[in-house]
Length: 289
Image 1 (spheres, rainbow, N blue to C red):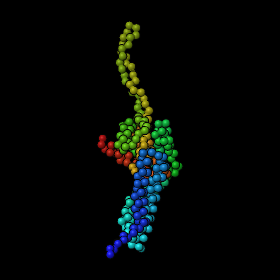
Image 2 (tube, rainbow, N blue to C red):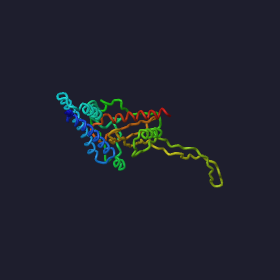
Image 3 (cartoon, rainbow, N blue to C red):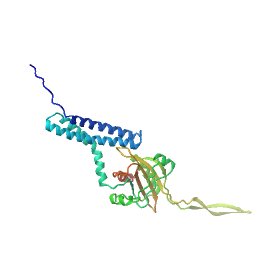
Image 4 (cartoon, rainbow, N blue to C red):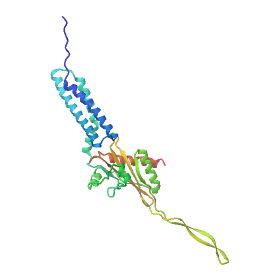
C-alpha cells in the first residue's frame, strides 16, 4: 500500500509578510514616479509613499508573528520571513535615516548665509509662476535655530569684481544642475572718465587750437546681482528654491545664498547641504582659474 506524504503547511503570516514587503516597494516606486513627474498633487504622491512605509512596517510585524508560529508549530516559511525582513529593512532604511535626522536637527526648512538680512526671493510674475506661487516667509526664530545647528554656514567673500564673480556664480549654478528662472547681472561702481581733446576753433578770422574736456564714460552706481533657481531633492524629487545675492564691496564681492524647501516644515539638513555643495563647487571654479 502506497503511503501519501503530506507536505508541512506554510505559516500564512510568513507568506503574507513577504507579499506585503514586496507590495510596499512597488507602491513606493509608484509614489516616487507620480511625485517626480508631477502627475498628481504633491500631497497625494506623498500620501502614497507614506502608505508604503506603513505597509512595510506591517510586513515586519507579520514576519515576527510568523517566526513565532514557525517556532511553536514547526511550519514552513523561514525563507519567506527572511525575504520579508530583508526587503522591509532595505526599504525602510531611507525613512529611518530621515527620522534620525529629524531628531538630530532643528525644525527648520529655510537656510541662509546671512541670518540678519537674508536675500529675499523675487516676487516677479515669472518667478512666482515657476515656483507655483511659493513666497517663503522666513520664520522669526529661524536665525536662532540655524546658528545653533549650522554655524558653519557663512557668507562667501571673494577678492574679485562683482561682474566677474557673477559669471563664476552662474557657472557654478549650471554645474550643479540647478534651473535658473531669473537673473540680474551684478555691476561695480565706476567713476565718470574724461579726457582732454584738442580742437581747432574759428573766431572771426582767427583760428586757434583749444583743449576741450570730453566725457568718455558716464558714472555708474554699483548694483547687486541676483540669481533665482530651483533644485530638486535627489530621491523624492521635491522642488527647493534658491536665491543668490552677489553684492559689490570695496575691492571685494560678497555672495549670500538662501535655500528653502517648498514642502514640509523640516528639511532634514538638505538646504544646508545644498549651500555647502555650492560653496565647494565655487571654490573649484576659483581654483581652476
